[in-house]
Length: 82
Image 1: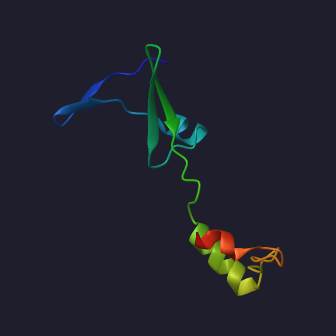
Image 2 (image 1 turned 120 degrees about the vertical axis):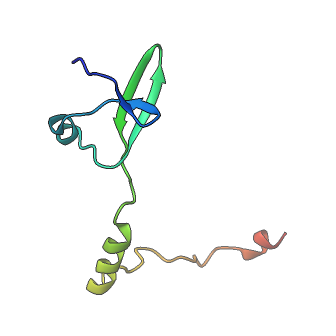
């Protein structure tokens, strides 16, 4: 695919079509990788996006219970006081 480099203010850039943005799920940010003479554009995925909402919903549903004890009976806290 051939794209034109256009002037944007004091810089230059490219415009990606809606089809490319949708196909590769590009929304707000991309990662630019320079590798072996190539420029690679990769969608930037926010791995923890909306976790706060999901945790709030879990709390409302009572699903935020510990799956295992946070302190075990055989733990020795003396090791941490050194």
